[in-house]
Length: 241
Image 1 (spheres, rainbow, N blue to C red):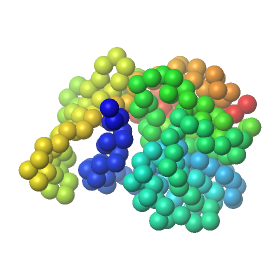
Image 2 (cartoon, rainbow, N blue to C red):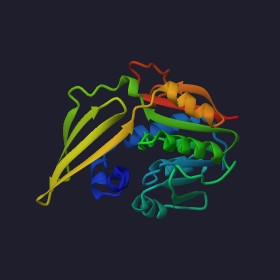
Image 3 (spheres, helix red, strand yellow):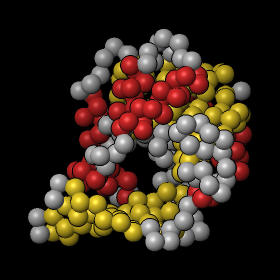
Image 4 (tube, rainbow, N blue to C red):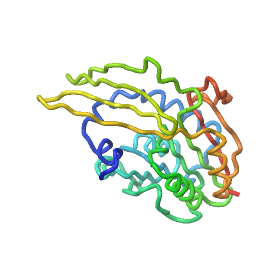
C-alpha cells in the first residue's frame, strides 16, 4: 500500500492548499538562522525534505552551497529548474545515507520529519543527517511542539481556487492527524497527513544515539526559549561530535 506522503505530496491539490503558506515567515526564520549561525560563504548545507526548494533557494542567496533532497519526484522536477552552480536538487529518501562527512549544516525544516510508522525509520533519518555532517557540523531540526498541541475545535475550511478544503485535526497516543476533504470537478477527495508525537526527551535519545549533541532548543521562529506547555515549535540545534 502506497504511503500517505507519497500520494499527498505528489498531488496537485497539496500545492493548491499550501500555495499561500507564509513565505515571509519562512524568509524571516532563515534570516534569523543566518544571523544566529553567521554562515561563511560557500559552506555546504543539506536541506532534507526540501519540497519545491523555496527554503534552499533562500539559503543559497545567503551564500550557502546547498543541496535539497525530497522524496517527491514532482517537487524535485520543479526545483531543478532553479539550480545553479551552488544550488542542487535530487530525489532522495531521508532514511537512506546520501554521503559521509560532507556538509557543514543539515536543515530539516517546517516539520519534515515524523511521517513514518516505525521508530526504526525515524532513527534511519537521524542517522542519515549525522552521517552527512562533517565532525563539528550542525543539525537544525524544526518540529511541531507536540506537548502544546490541542485538537479541540481544530476544524476549519479554506477556500482556495474555488475549492473548499475542509480540514480536521485530531490525535491519538502516537500521531497527530490532519484529514483534508474537498470536492473538485464533481469528484470527492480525502487525504490525511500524519505526524508522529515525538517529545523533546525522545528526540534527545535519537540524537545521542547518532553521535549528535543537543546544544540549544528554541520554541518559535524568532528563536525564543522553548516552553514545553506553550511554544508552537520545537527547534533543535545539535552538533556532531
